[in-house]
Length: 242
Image (cartoon, rainbow, N blue to C red):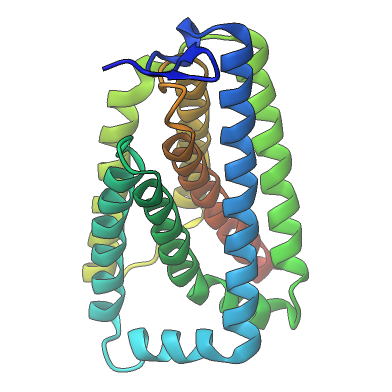
């Protein structure tokens, strides 16, 4: 059922909303995205500086090894679906924020091993910072392109879903076969993450109801995090070849 907020009907997609309503929705979405990125960075800093991150990594990989990683990936996928379901619950704003918060925490945990590898390679956080700046630059460029063209990229959804599961299957095969995932895989994942970002940004402009700015920010955050993960992995792999 439609309802009114500040004089606007707020259950319709942003593409059909009044200009002021659409602008407010986009602003809220990207403010929440910035907040999620800031919370993620702060949580990673806290985990690393307090030593809790190292404890978590040892707990996951110390005795479990590959099984520990697979368990973490399974938990991440399950928590991701739960977080998205909560964030899309328009009836409860606290539940929406709980979904976004849960996803940020899970991303922080799954990033820890890669962050430690990056710090070992450089002796400091310079590689992480460089990957972060490159990620933000690419996000800004892709976002600007979608906003300027105003094109609807929702047609990419099925292909991205299939490719995402193919990538996940490739990771599983690599773990079970004991083979590495080369630079080519990392490059393809950067391309896939860029596709997800374009798709999610397009959905913000065209398909999300203007009440769902928390869910929209979660979708964007997931794409940004995926992009950052593989850009950082690319930086680590290329440095290892020097």
